Length: 293
Ligand SMILES: [Fe+2]
Image (tube, rainbow, N blue to C red):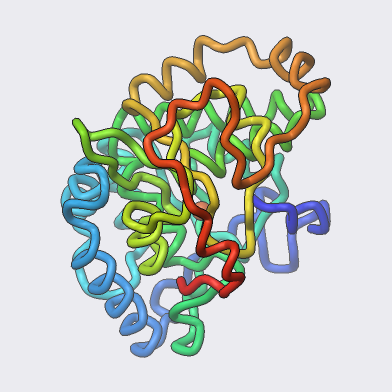
């Protein structure tokens, strides 16, 4: 989900099926590629307990993702399908939005098959198998989150018809990729972009720089986001149930029309009505230093 997709060709690359999927070719991964997964897995699984929503750790466990090496999507899908009806398939890289949404609406998660090189361990532009599988798949084992992702896919297809894809892209960005969730008085990570990033797992929860404000659907759909650095604002949901319920209960077509005349909100802004958990000092963004993965 990024602006980069706008430049993708409309047809799949050679070797990919009409739905853009490719074989994962698991046996083609080298020992060095498996070792890279293990290194990333170890680093994140040591860091996340107490930071990530418990359902994420439950997902890692029930999907037996601590097994060494890059997961075999076939095996992973077998377990996942038994739990929530989802499966994971490989794609060559970013796919067009309609393709992405259609897969989600059919309870299929598309994942990059490649893994970052050692020199990319702390910075990566395009999502690799570690981001896609470690970051996204554990929560697909949670029945409520699994339903949210399917509803998102169906909503995405409708947003394309209504010319409002950018609104729904913001919802994905600030929930599925960079969402925080309340856990009593504490905040926890559930967004895949945070959970798969060593640096952002610390930054999103502990750093005084970013705003942390209560989730509000219209507010989120008006808020720009950063693709080049850590987020300047994180939105906090109360529960997966509340997020799913709001998504299913909202009639998006009139909402998109109403938002047409509402100005965008800057990435660092606090606006009237915000439920503020933390007002960010924005020191990180002001310093202009690049983020570490
Ligand atoms: Fe992602």
